Length: 298
Image (tube, rainbow, N blue to C red; front, top):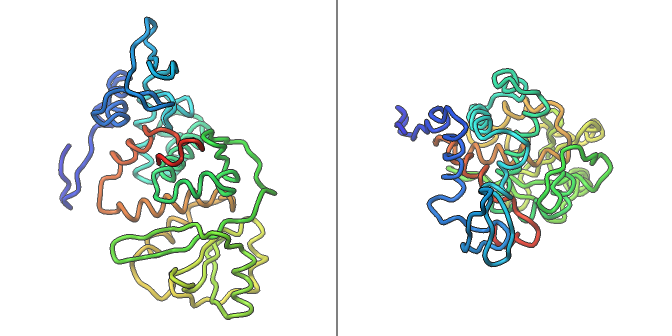
């Protein structure tokens, strides 16, 4: 580790892990954080090693590997490739650029980046609300499994988020029971100001939120007649919205129901904008994938 001129810690582990064995040791250090090995199913620490190198829980008898049940175990990448990819993701490279630099297929990289985004959501304060409701199912999160090929075009309503911004942080909140139809109603009946950035529709202040926001998808033109281009976010300089706009423009082809992954990524990046996010991402990547029956633990 070194310190950058801005005072942020520079994490060099991903550069130093030049072998698969070293990369695995590094990821395991993020997975267990100095704790004893424990069962990913029941969390008991009575674990012993089998002759073939696998582990078995002495409490529930579950047999597993050291990275079983963790985000890093999804996608089929080697530990070294995960480290290299996460370093590039931290630098905000596109999936196509990452695929070229890593020498991997685009679909492989896109899947891995999606897993990273799910890991970011799983670490958020509102993870259970997002992952274990209709929004999570629409995104392809099935009670602990990430389903990449799921067609969600006709499933459920488009989620609406509320933006709460303070001087040093922002929170992107899934608004309970809020529907796109409500936003349209507030605009038409109560003059709630609305604007659009590509497929992203956002409003003026609403209750304790600085804005409501959703992705209109391919049919975003249906909201064109409710536009009023002077909402609160557009009157501010600096802050989360200034940070997010240029990045949102790079998210081409995002579906309305996968949009929450990108929005929560922006929340994470903004709230850690003065830090080296690589070690945080590695910890998220090596965390256990939350399952419905374990959601109260996350």
